[in-house]
Image 1 (cartoon, protein in one colour):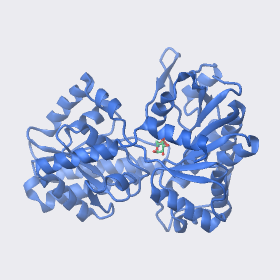
Image 2 (image 1 turned 135 degrees about the vertical axis):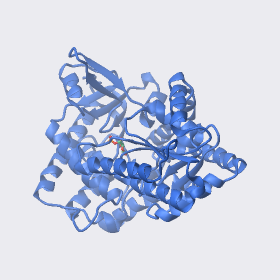
Image 3 (image 1 turned 60 degrees about the horizontal axis):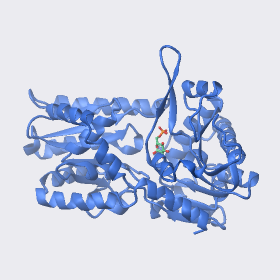
Image 4 (image 1 turned 90 degrees about the vertical axis):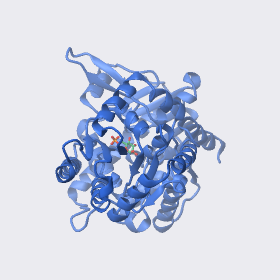
Length: 464
Ligand code: G6P
């Protein structure tokens, strides 16, 4: 499907691609295109640049599309067997590597590295090899290959062996674990990951902190970085896209609905996340509850608008977390709600237009992850907020490196301090809030997606 037969000059490889296929009732397959930084990045190099995106089929619809030979120009989807993909994606990438880099394990029960883990690790190798082989087939002599994320850490090393002529980059969209946490992985697996990554000419990270952690792991466990170069590219928000999209009619409609849910004259504390353990949604709710307990003057005058969209629902721990978020939100509403005031407005059905509507209405944005590679919500709220939102921002989010000065910083574990930070955010003077918000928006858009992508491509090609 959509092979370039060895002619691609720029290749991107990622687990999730720019398109997915949904099966309609009549059996026909409909292509749905997604957005995001990589999509804008690739479109910035133009349609004639010989670019190809290699990604994995993720659903039955995708697999059927590959088998029927359906394809989009510039995309090659790999039909990796569903069990292999599930072991690699759910088992290794999302239950092990994601947990290590976000430091999410809860001892004494986790992590478990046993025979089942070894079986899944073999699938992760198979899945990485399928990508390396497809890239080796598609790439033109000397082409640039940009491999994405923790799903594909072994690809650079495997591809280097198959095609020493290529320029290979890898970019991590997550944090990187410090050596003391990374060493939790079985020694041979840890080394294989580091060596796999070091097969690249250049490795990109979202912040200096994550790049330093990776370097420290290499120094401790792999004898250093060797010839591999390291770059920091802090992906920013895309202001033109966001502003245009957020002023369309569907967003205005959602704003009217949300205003009704919030109620006349009330402040809105907004959060929008995947229902993701690292996003720390439950502690955010508990901090809001403590705000209502400690500062009764805010009762009836504020609403917590929390959007928690389903994610990785194949994993029991994510399903349990989704249920816990709902339980805590309901408990707060029962404890504090009154006739005309629902303290928490929780939505769990993914709706991009409604997210943008909430960004525009926000008085305060709450972004309190335990650890986060960057966090684009922290960047999108200041760009879109109509009245200049204040940000309560975790010091453990990558975005904090660029936006910490004008946000109100929190330790994400500290519920009491987060409650006080919410109070402080709500009491900033409108002028102060507007000034901060302007500076936050400037920091948030310093490196929009197209430049973020081109900077990496140029650095890879120029050897810088
Ligand atoms: C993180 C990863 C991305 C991934 C996203 C959504 O941000 O770094 O690569 O696309 O999560 O996760 P999912 O498992 O739904 O692809």
